[in-house]
Image 1: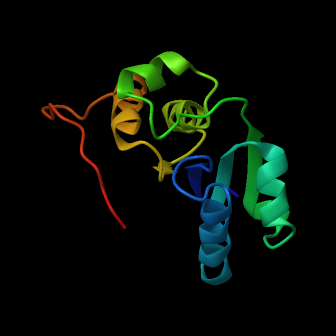
Image 2 (image 1 turned 60 degrees about the vertical axis):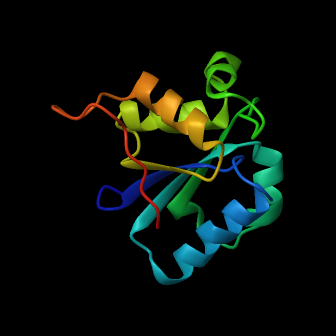
Length: 132
């Protein structure tokens, strides 16, 4: 696993989650076996969709009790706490347990929670978003 890219995934963010998020992970895994997915969200729901479609050596599920809602303001999301799938997925990058984090959830909340958890690159004042 040491050569794999470790991707933290907020599985509870975005419309149609976690199904669409898990479908994306499965789709990626079919052609790319260099990724390891650390999936954050409601374990029972995620398991319904992952259903042995990926070898267990390529993912783990981190059960979380809370989610950032699309209707939350960034401040509400940050206050909602450190037990959300978004916060914990970002924190896994901070702890160097993951290399990158992906979320299809609340963009404002993602930026605020990331800024609270991760250091900015020297001489960079504002966080940036990247789209795939």
